[in-house]
Image 1 (spheres, one colour):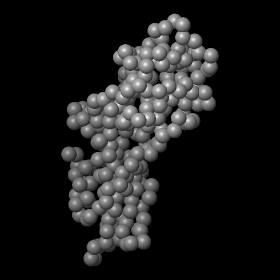
Image 2 (cartoon, rainbow, N blue to C red; image 1 turned 135 degrees about the vertical axis):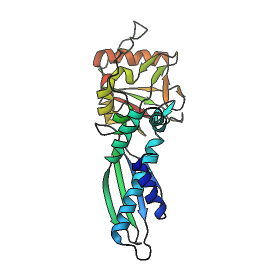
Image 3 (tube, rainbow, N blue to C red; image 1 turned 90 degrees about the vertical axis):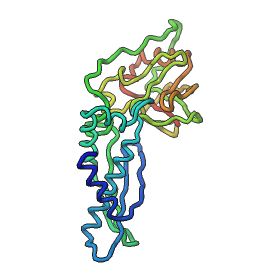
Length: 251
């Protein structure tokens, strides 16, 4: 374990703490607590609570799925460059709240953006990927009468888990949307997908193409019917919404 996380661990064992980490729309958030002890200065309580929050954030980030078969921790263990970038991103997490509570404890909250130059997405995705064209629809008779602005896939009831780099496939196994199709800059700046509890998401624009997933593969990858895969690819040929990551997965 690197020195940064050794310091976080030391802070955690000094006092009793409570875990509270969560994922939000645009960021990951964790909170840390410290509690008064005899003779302990208030400044020490603040420092320990903040370091505690950073430790919980690091644990949350390590557990994130990158793909259906890898987590952030997996990649950090295998790749020193990714490990260094993840640690830098964690050190850049912002303290957004640090204050005493009415019970005498001190509570700190830290946040880390999901996407953008200093995000976990930027840290774990490999830059320099050779961008591949999206597949062509297999049926030449697919027509789209609407200029679709994005894609919404309804995955409710299929136990879909979040991932930084999920893949959307046809039932026949063709990958129709993946990191390799959008490239590093688009994936980092936009995030490959948005996870939502509602089909009415602004990310997919005013006239999204809405389809129902038929299956979730390995917890994170989404399968649609071959017919819907063709509809998606045909619609994308017209308005190119996939390259801008205008994709929403409803859980």
